Image (cartoon, rainbow over all chains, first blue to last red; front, side, top):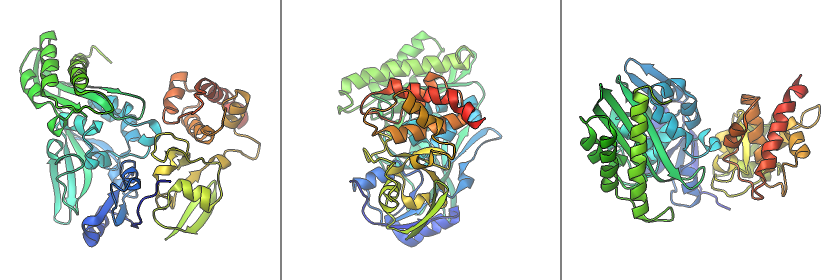
Length: 291
Length: 157
């Protein structure tokens, strides 16, 4: 039987109360949102917080909306809610592509977007997707709010740049015209983490790729993005030659490890193919040629 | 700490440690052993119950987190008029072999049909993709859920 080490439990009724509880209990306190990453780690005693602060009552953080040219996703939005959100899918198909392959439908009813980002698992899909989308995570502490680019959020595996008494409140994704996006993942079975996964967001100006974001999950890419691939592709024509170049570059720049999900050279080959598929699909969607 | 949870329409209050998981609260504090306990890692879905109408893996939720919420277990499926169509479907279509996954499968199936009364086979497969059947009897499980979808309206009408 897997049971976590003993801890004290508190429920926060507001963001302010969550921050105040974090300050009161110090660095050994942890926020618990959906709990589908934290509780398994606590059962294995990889994590043993002295106090859990339950933030599931913070329904203010459960909204998805478009505000001017920003898609705002509350940190407590469940994965299932993001997958159900028409407005999220309309602007960024990559969000729905990714949500369909994150965990399983039951886990998606509990797991939250903010929790996934703050857990900072290098194999987690949305951390890569939101980095490719150049999203920002809004975090609040008693001194006020600040925006952290998702590309700067992870500070190593399972570590973030958040300070001990800060809480993530919202993800902000800039909406720019002419975007198309897609995510592709290979996993061993439903619910598993990626063997390798790649996503692409492109902004087309005519037939030119004016900007691009490349997501690479589970393959050792710094901050889960293909920065060299983005640089190689930006400004080029959206054609087969560019797609081939993107696949080659992503395959070269990733740093996968050999583990039970496969050898490094296999993952490297997968990254090349998945990057090409994601980019081809993103371009086709941008042109309205693919649903 | 004192925790009050509404389970199958009835409020239950117990003094528990904060680390007690919902699955153990149901089985050990209340004796509701219809909810099974399997992998302990939120992979297998055996322990699935409904929380506020949504299927949730009760091995990965603290009982304390369920306080103030409505939990429905397999014991709450049967109504005044008899078995739920999902239960009847699993009987009629032989949807169980060893029966270990059955409570979780049925709670997931009930939530699916409440939300989508006429699911395609693909939608049924997708909905139960977080519930593992150790006997691999998926074809009959899908048939059972299809049977329930076809007979749900007769029962509620």
